[in-house]
Every structure is written in structure tokens, then in C-alpha cells.
Image (cartoon, rainbow, N blue to C red; front, side, top):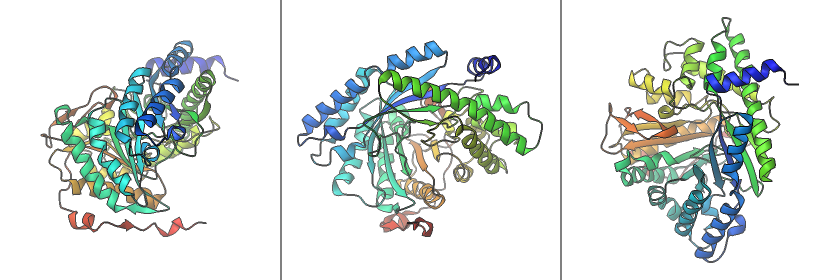
Length: 449
């Protein structure tokens, strides 16, 4: 039973501590849109999205007003487009249909211009991936992802090598916008099928026809809760768990009620702490409240590991279906504390990589020099994929080589994407390693059947 104290506490979280539901994401299966004709496939894609999601924005806005809970983003994810266009090569027609549909229904982003090539890559999938730069440069709301590895299959190094080139091409095609297209592209290892967050959301083939997934946030709420904790780290972890429970309960309510009103399946609540550039809404500030002078200091990885674990333990008790990525995000450009730490030199890409061993995703929204070679970007992807593969977790790379800018400059992305100081990367070449191609075999612990 919810009492008056809890109601007032939730109101305070919303009004003063930046609690919000970061996204309601409607997953739509496009498997029934497959036709021999590229034009007909695109038409069916447009029709299904606009029909299925026509009330998503209004429903979310109405519910936000009724409950007094901000619902920041309304999004759609679809079946990986490479799967539905493989028989007719109609991905260019579909990308136009996706963009048109996204604008028609008024959503913020649409995810799923994606390919799953974690073990191998057909000639068509290669051509599809090569279309990503043009797709992202010519659309405003469509996002893309490519899964290049998994614990069960190993890492497809041919795909890794290709993605380094694709990211550079995305950067060059949007050089006049600080290489913004790269912010809409993520490279995964162990991608999940029910992720509500962009740019990596897609609707997995194991999902229902229509499923609503919700992503909550609340770094500011956790930071505020810890300000009153003077005890040891066990007490800190307990307070994080208690707070994560309350945050996730809000998301669970929104997920159930939104799905009910839309007449779709209620999916998962992703309880990730997703920061924003707004002061007071930072994961870095949580780590500093625990006891670090600055994020990036020795002990940062241990603090983040505890935070991530406590968030999951608390959140899982508040919903019968916790999924997605769930944990703590560390996107540099979207976190005021991370931005400050990189500006001061307290946080570098090597420390960020270490932190990804224990956090929710990976190297996220990191601006790097525009002259970074493709093989260096591929090396970053390979390293991050190896962390995910060996640790049986989802890892990702979303880096932005900002054309025409170098270390010390800034990239401006706007909105929730924020801004970021451009940080240095190790430019010693991994070219020979990347050019070998083939596949890094799966680790021994993948043999569990």
C-alpha cells in the first residue's frame, strides 16, 4: 500500500531531483511487411508504423499530465531492417518510409536501421551496412545499430573493420553538424532485443508483434538520497537499492498504463540511470557523493560497480519484467559531471574503458579528434566488444570523430545529446591486427549447453 509520505516523496523527486520517465518506446515487428517488391515493402512499413503508433505521443502526454510524471521521449523501435529487406534489397526505400513515418506520428527517434552480424556477414548485409552513412545523414530521427559480437559466437572482426570506416564516413557526411550522424549509430556486442534507449533500440525477432518498453532515469534522485548517508559502503548500497526500487516502480506504473491504453503488450522496464547535461542529473555526481574527489580518480571503477549492482538489485523488486540494459549509463556528452571531469583531464578514454567493464553499456557519446583513422576506431570497437564477450554483458561503442576539430575543442550536439570536449585517443596503429579479419573465437565459458 502506498502511503502519503511516499506520494510526497515522489512529488519531491519529480519537482526537485529530475526524476522522469526517459522514454516510452513502442516496439513494432515488421516481419509481416516483407514483400518481393521494395516499393511495396516500404509502403507496408509506413502503414504499419503510422497505424500502430499513431496514438503513442498523445497517450504518453496525456498520462504524463494525469500522473504529474514527465515522460521525456516517445520513440519507436522496429525489426532490424536488414532482415526485412534481404530478399529485395529495398533498404533505401524503407529508410525513406521510416523517416516519413517518424515525422508523421511525431516521435523523437526511431531505432532499428540495424544489422546483426556477430558471427558472419552476407554480401547483402555488407551492402546494407555501407548504406548507413547516407541513411543517417539524410534523415533526422532514424537511428542505427550493428551487433558485431556475442559471448556465444565471438567477435566478427570483418564487421569491426567495416564499422570503423562506416563511423568515419558518417562523420564526414555530417561534418557541418559536428559529425552528428555518429551520435545516431552504435556498435554492439551482445545486443539485447528489448532496449528502449536510442541509438541502439531495435525490436527483436523474439518479441511480440507490438510491445511497449519503458526506460526510467533518476541520477539526481540517487545523488540526493546519498547526501544523508554517513555510514559505510553497505549502507550506501542499501540506500541506492531503496531509491532504485522507488524509481523503477514509477516506470512500471507508466509502462502498464501506457500499454493498456494503446492496446499493446507491456514489455520491460529498463531501470538504467540515464543522465542528462542538466546540473543535478549526473551519474558522475553520484560517484563523487559516494566519496571520490572527481570521477576518474582511483576507485572510480569500484564505485561504479557498486552503483550498478545496487541499482539492479533494487529495481528488480519493483517490476516483474526488468530488462533492456538496466544499470548506470556513462555517456560523456550527456552527463554534466562527466563533461567537467574530461575538461579537467581527470577522465580519459582509457579510464572510461575500464569503467565499462562494470557499467550498463560501454563507451558512449565520446567525441574524439576528427582525424582519428578508421582502424583506430575499429580497435576501440574491438576492445569494447572483447569486454562484453568475455564478461557476458552488453557493451557498445558510440564515438564521434568530429571532423575539423581536435583535442581541446568542443562538439555541440544539442538537446539531450549535449556537448562534449574532444578527448585524445591512442593513435598507435592497430592496422595489421584489424586487417587480418576473420573472427575472434568465443571464450571457453560460452560452451554451456
